[in-house]
Length: 382
Ligand code: ZN
Ligand code: ZN
Image: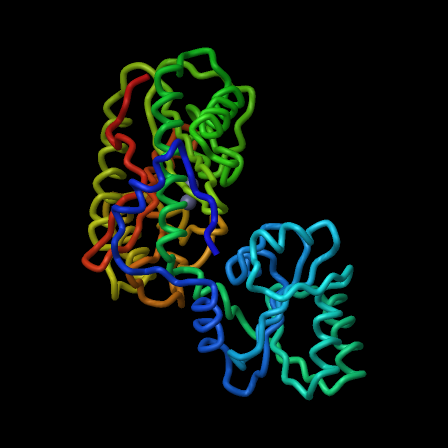
């Protein structure tokens, strides 16, 4: 199944930069999935749409997917009439079951065939959905098995197609930053800058924004997840912009902090400290590294510099903007392998004065890591 990934014809060039042999076809994803779930489970019912998309390529807003352990059995996707044509286009290898109650009907169909221990996604089923599934299972020889995250750890490692899309998303993010940088000036509101970034990403080929862009000026830059408002930029402000483009479902994530006018001494010092920490931690990213050790490294450095730690140093990116692996204290995410995409984003925040965060989206390579976002990390004056 080939999916579109074109930004002005650039994706093919970007593709060629990653000859790591990471290609995993849809059927190979099912193979990885089958190997990941407990041996006594006969089939897994995926109800979380992002996981359905990962496993089958389906991008609609309503569906469930049943994957059986027996590789001879087809995977079955259930969705309603609105998506009949989309399934034919996006997942031609998957058997289609038209249904207005996808999970229920897949369960009943499977139960009618033969006795089955059926895994369900415990993290993504509501209590009422579970009660419904249980009621149907009770009428069939089906035993429900609650599975903790079974797809999420697999999603952390990207194949060539996903890497090409993520690379294109990062390129659109860089392009938007370059575009907006030349237009920033005192008097613009945070909301206006947010819209400029959003529009610039779309103009650069993004299908959407990874999240509502964070634009935090002056004292607001001390709030890690400030919501942009009507405050106008004034000379002397630190200005933090955290944003990302989406291409073919893959989410980029980048933060840059710039200064409006000339920086003061403390602003320069703060920016220098954060940029150095970010560079050092980026340099530690390689296969075999434990995600929580990267967080420890950033934490130690921020504390040594005499500041408080406000958040983890990063997270995986992909079909979701926050996903495995988690770069947080005590994270149980698996050691990094080539193909994992993640952010490194240390920040230091001084209440009432401002703050600095520098964030890039990285790809773990066989020998280290490569930053997919490449915008200038120095303290740019606008
Ligand atoms: Zn971010
Ligand atoms: Zn982030």
